[in-house]
Length: 488
Image (tube, rainbow, N blue to C red):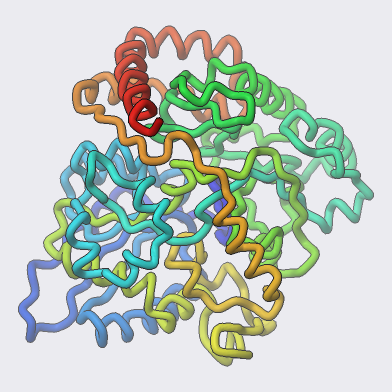
């Protein structure tokens, strides 16, 4: 689910740099007869309201099964990339984290090599992964992450606050693209000018049917649309469809539909509240249509979505949530073991995601539950960013038909042509670093609609060329061409 704000989060934790770096050092290696080892973990998003209850119960299980405990530091979505970049570059030690800019950082040696550790210390979790996850996360023949097995394919949707749709009698049936949002956003803004029409903020990404060999923060992409050139690596910001979408966002910004401080704001728009009208979300097979969005919103008729991109098994989707072990961790094997338990221990995983049995939910079958009135997604951890969704209980609202459809669509999902392509960027590390710095200057302004697209892209492209963009593009294209030739 969600890419930018990722539903099932409420509020943003504005962790200061001091508080982040101050708890990064792992304990020294523990002896077998010593007390539990406390592993440090960095997680993106908002700390659950019931965090202390969740982690206390979870640590009891982890102590019993691995002689370990977790201490989780939450960093807001708008700050995570920047804070983790500082942590990684400083050499500070941490044990576990949500991967950031996975492909690039894996090649930089930021993360521990888990190729041998996963089959040894998290064998069950490793073998439960959809094979596409392994293929999509292998870098130069090595695996640096344990992906959360869940929405192996995804599609972008515009999710609407159904309560506001009904309240103002709005027609959303025509929405199939960013541009098609214009009439309904205009109508809503006129009727409720004080409520944000389109919830966009720092870190938001406009989607235009591309997949990315080096992640969506860098200007290298392959057009995966039905009529696109699947064999060419391009700058997505130079494509007609991306420019059209960015121009639509810019028009919405100028009209006041997008928050004025979108490029810098960490203002949160909880999915269960009425302070927003439309938002972008990523949904996949384990979301069962709009069911997961409605869970997050705390009702059964609060969210309705419209698809704007092609469902795809993409590199970006397969890397949407990767758990990694810090290269400097003194407890790498133990960290991998704990990751494995998070994925496979049903009591541990479901306790973090659904809460406490008898309080937040009641068991209705071996793997089915009914939620109580006390359940709230804001109290628990989000499933897509915790553990293997196949090991989660399903609510009574998930029917046998839904489960069959889930499994069928996973098998039928189209794979990106980039799947399995792992470029070697060792010869252009300096250029990529310079390109990333330039993108950091422009990317939020473009994607939130704050900057005028055509003029900004022209300036950005000039800076990219000076930074060595052409050299990197040629290298990637040659490697990609060679890769495609081997697949033929």
